[in-house]
Amino acid sequence: MEGCRVLITGGAGFIGSNLANHLAGSNDVVAVDDLYLGTAENLSPSVEFHDASVLDDDLPADIDVLFHLAALSSRNMHEDHPQRGVRVNVEGFVNAVEQVRGECDTVVYASTSSIYGSQTEPSGEEMAVEAQTGYEASKLARERYAEYYSNQYAMTMAGLRFFSVYQGYGGAEEHKGEYANTVAQFADDLAHGRAPELYGDGSQTRDFTHVEDVVRGIELAADHRLDGVYNLGTGESYDFNTVVELLNEELGTDIDPVYVETPFDDYVHDTLADATKMTEATGWEPRISFENGVERVCEPYT
Image (cartoon, rainbow, N blue to C red):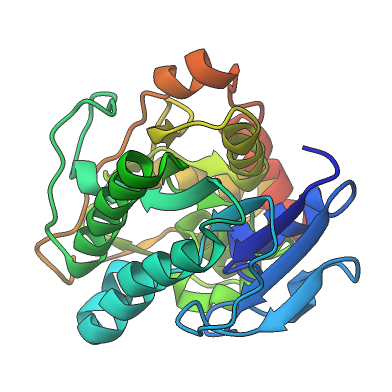
């Protein structure tokens, strides 16, 4: 993507800031964030930053592409504040699209792999999805509104179902604290002599996808003007016990995890992506193996 003016909501957050800084080299990038989960320190000086909410009625709308990443981005945030979750994740999405509609017809937005539930087999977009949590319900609502805008206004609305995106505290995750990816949290614990806490017996699995691969997928979705929903994941999964072992090995530590009871019944135990649809549409494939990703996560500590 070159020579475009783009708006990134949630642009000071983890994924949003990585996308903003990546695109700013050859595009006019505007980032909007209310700093609930983001920090402007993540952003390059070349990014135009607005401290604003997706619920505001005066968002920068003179753009070519909308990347809508703003969200309450975890199960716990929604269960603690369900009304806020609906307002930000659903109303905020509609508000942003409505304001840019007429100026731009290309939208790429964040959905979630959590709607597949626990899956040890690769999850394809044709699989049945469900809402066990308010977070998942809000993302499904977002997908339905995107379908409406596509059908009613001929806008291209690409919903990307992310799978366990990570980078590490040396990147743009540290500000997320307890909401950062488990890889980042476990690495920071081990590096500081703390035992990571694992739910259950540590056998749960995730399809860990490095943020650089995700950013590349987001950009390709806009370049190819994709419409519909697409998975962004590696097609490989690792259990949490193995994650701790790999981090210990890379950090030169030898700290056993602590196992604690899973605190809620709707916990997603396993995720695994089938990204064939995305690959066929754009040529996207993950480039960063998990082993290489672990090296990157641990590099600031070694």
